Image (cartoon, rainbow, N blue to C red; front, side):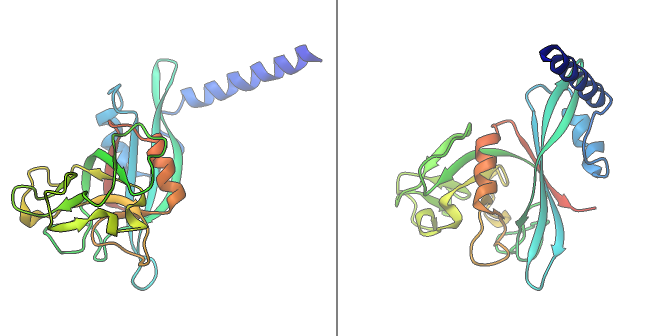
Length: 229
């Protein structure tokens, strides 16, 4: 009997391996991102995760919704394949995406990397560098510190992050506007949802999805914000 179960197990494993070996991108072949991002990072051993935020427009009156899919690279023999490990939804800016300037209530589109995680709540399991938010931590918009998270209380203009709960209970920052140009926009975060079905330019998640992202993502993950097909 044990030999029979072992034989069945080996056959199942072989069939599963053959199935994966024939697929380079799965299980969502309709997603257009494969033409660009997969080719770009298919052979890059550092980049093992791609997080897609696909803006779908107003789902209901006033609600700005996006589909979110997280893919993780796996090796199948000598090939590399992308496995979907999360599919969920999120809110984006009140006026959609394609951010152009400070205060336009849009989420930036394009490709980004993660700079650091943060939270008012204690640090969860995460591979990302994590800032514990207290009363001295600001998302600063002062000259010379624009679009930076200041931790020593030396900034008093912008967002005192501890005042933004539940939104900043957990979150992470992306490298939008790394030249710190004041007119281009600041404090673009992936954070928790608040009371409104949109943001001022960030991407907002349910807590369970955010905790999964913090636990799963590494510093080399790539984020693509674009329109849904």
